Length: 303
Length: 320
Image 1 (cartoon, rainbow over the protein chains, first blue to last red):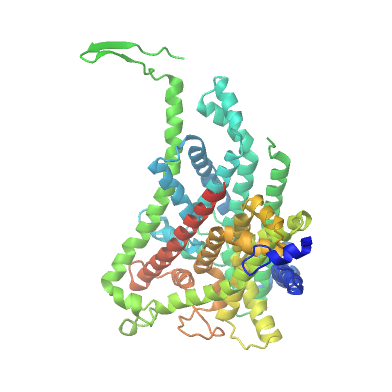
Image 2 (image 1 turned 90 degrees about the vertical axis):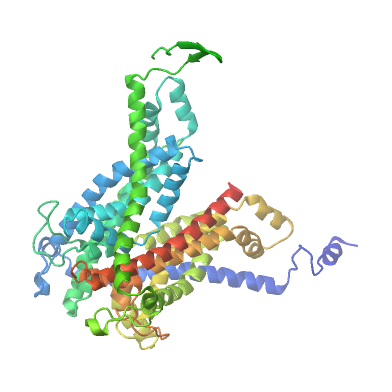
């Protein structure tokens, strides 16, 4: 028997050796085509989204658009200053709250917590669950606990900032943990062997070694925060405000809220303003993501 | 370093020596740090408690006025009507949520899984370096932008113009399909992680037996990564169920039990956002509906998340 005959004999109904037929080649080619179209649809979708808001929005963009307050009456005079300022303030509040809390939690879970302790397991499962809670539910938390209820702040800037911070905290924790885990144990052991305490090891070795990853994660979390609309709607952000927030206890608006309001307007000129505001929001997000990528490439430690 | 305190005491059991160190400034500092870090970690548990608490109290109050069975099984959702005609059956909102999510998943599951197989098994490194960032960008686009796209372009120009389907300004079809595009990167990325975690030896074994690339991808890698893939689908479903602004902008605000996707629908999340905007007085029944619906949504997504976390842990245990 020749090799081919043996192989042919081995290809019985139950054989693991696949039968090659002309159908196989067609099927393979068809599957490759399907995969190409799936990825292609994602590309076309993203392209169409960008083309849609850019073609509507770019004609609206001007320095006046960025430095005017929104008008409820005249679309041409209507700008996004209060929305941009509100978004920047929200981002700052969010960063101030989320960076220490997120990094501290990540350090605790990676460096101190024993995995089989019930408390630590609880925290871990809890963070995973929090990451999957819909953003609108965080809005309800903000509404019931911060805006009204126990804290009763009213629909103010600080309330919006805290709500967004709670929303992105799990993201920061998860990313910071990964960055800390990437620091090899040998670094810690070397430091401890030289007589450093655990905290000295963390502060002088682990954190500097993971700072690029942590910073990247924080920026990505903040870019998620400033794109959120639903929680701010529920918390009661203002619409078309003609003033910038004057402090933490001031009424506020934000870019996604202004976009939402204009998108709902029956007047098409206002809808075009929404596209203009989307352009500005996307440029801000693009800048933040570029900084994150730059940070990762420039400062990432290779062990 | 402090000297170990040697406190010897003799008793019935013999000599006992206490070797614990006296706390020094340094060891106290270390303990203090640990407690501070632990407190920060505990805050995440507090967040959960606050979410559950803020939902639960008002929900209980809501059920003081509306019977649970009316809420769970009623088919009319009309809290905006005057008191006599108000009806609080949550079924239309739940149906809207499930129906739009199903439309979204019908798009996102095949496209997401095909993209994942492509990225994990087929794509050359060069191509992967382009495709992955594009999917990440798609995942990073704010949902309000998807909403704008669905409302101003996809409904009028694609569904009505190009395909001539004849949808309303606000319709479930457009919101659902674009939500599929929104969920696609989530499914693709989690499923790809699961497939990449399948050890190369399994693939090599199959190739050694003469299997083709298609057979290795679909009969070896796909089943081996199944729990991770199911986790990706569940996670995608959870995102779709919780999506708010896209539906609010493009899907309309009509609680609807219809099967016709060209009509306007409202989901639980979209109802919450729409209702909370209208500055309603705290304690009124309209205010309480936010919490009852929010609680229902929270329980639904929590169940989905728990399933997906379990499944992810399962495939990690197998291959890592």
